[in-house]
Image (cartoon, helix red, strand yellow):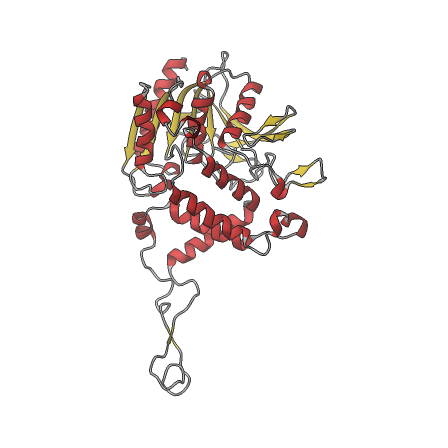
Amino acid sequence: MESSIGIVTPQRMHFAEPLALQNGSTLAGYDLMVETYGELNADRSNAVLVCHALNASHHVAGIAADNPKDIGWWDNMVGPGKPLDTNRFFVIGVNNLGSCFGSTGPMSLNEATGTPYGARFPVVTVEDWVNAQARVADAFGIRKFAAVMGGSLGGMQALAWSIMYPDRVGHCLVIASTPKLSAQNIAFNEVARSAILSDPDFHGGDYYAHGVVPRRGLRVARMIGHITYLSDEDMATKFGRALRRAEALVDEVKDGSGNGNGNGKDDGYRFSFDVEFEVESYLRYQGDKFAEYFDANTYLLITRALDYFDPARTVGGDLAKALSHTSAKYLIVSFATDWRFAPARSREIVKALLDTRRTVSYAEIDAPHGHDAFLLTDARYHNLVRAYYERIAQEVGV
């Protein structure tokens, strides 16, 4: 029977050993925020790492101790009796480097300067995150994860884990993800970044010193992103062309002459640029909310990490070759209406795995919700994941 994990408290883990980054620089010392659920068994074989997407964090499930309204971003997936059952598995969530939820990032104090890193925080990659997460595993004494799992950008991390640490991953669950971004996806990210960079309050990334936040840029960036997370079908169902008020389309303006605008022509209607359609109201609400809690420099960093991810780049673009030395078993899941990371991109991963004779299961869920479907409760999707973890549980004896 499913139930809530209840109140959870994260821990801050400090790592003094410098971390060599993909860009050639080194991060001297850093903190990572970590949250865990369930109990690690005696032989440490039941550990599962859950990797987060762009605007999520270490808070995967349960209720935050300092905010009863803050429910974990994958609470419907992780918990007692849920598809990833914390009665059987020890689950770890790690907030990635460069994020704004407690791990070392642009908002953190740079000890060398005595000021926040701001735009001087080094560019990080998916591979950097995986190397940092491996140190978390080491700290817990976990030699091998029963599974590494993630959706979207989290799925990229799971895939990278299976490539970079083939002997430390039993199963790799890649959900609503891609082996690399398309040019169109990179373009969406660039438009979002441009919105932030062009905000007068950005101040070259040093807005902290000015006591401001580039809210306008963040709002637009989130609105752009949110459009790509939903399907056309889902938007039509939720909003259609509904107006917020019946008279919103046009307002008749009377000047006392009976004509519309006093110019002698009977065109007395004025179109408005206020929020008129329900979908506009929704996007602006999402944008405003996002600008209140997310850091602009973090947004720039994480979207660039998305752009750079391409595990086949160093082997001539041959994904099968990049995956040829992996040893994990894979579950790849896509959603039919996800046009951000379309099913065709998941099938690229499946084909590459089959070409290298790896064990892989694939499912394409015909859900109407677009990219966001991986976060939502769908019985077919959740039953699939539940069954897969049942198999893993039998393998590790939990």
